[in-house]
Image (cartoon, rainbow, N blue to C red; front, side, top):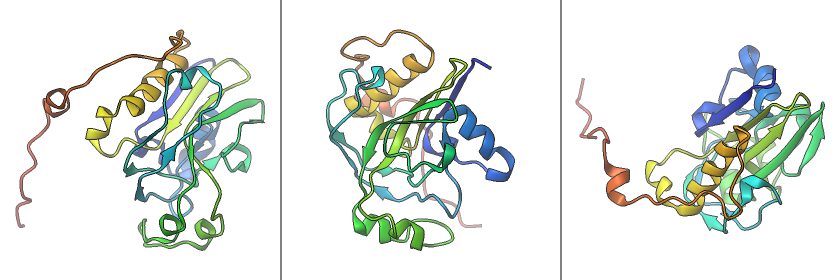
Length: 199
């Protein structure tokens, strides 16, 4: 169908591959796969962006988050470069190279490190990507979204807002979506987080 596929917020890209892996690859171009992908907390530097409406007005930034990578992409592509696979245009938007420490660290359950993650040292990884299917439908995946306060970063917020407009086939302004968020805005309506009660 010509619908929209969205997986925004990193846990939204994780599926059981036997249940919905093929569908996620078809809808949004890829997904997190347990014991194949990994989920470290790290601070990638996003320094360069492709020429794409989603990148409009986005400036280099870095944000500490639980950025998933080594995703299971359509056609088994690495996801670090634009590609056309199975009639789908795949464009990585947020791409950065994890340090060796990030690749080697214990970051998943069951605990790593995983040899296949370490074997790709030096490879850039896509953490936000966009796809356009041959029927005209669009989709995207975003692996950030763990820490709520990151929405206070103007470029982090802008790239996701731009993505939402693009996937809905609305025009993204030349300078991207302008928005402001205060600390008070971010703290409003949060559930209180107290100490966990002993059982």
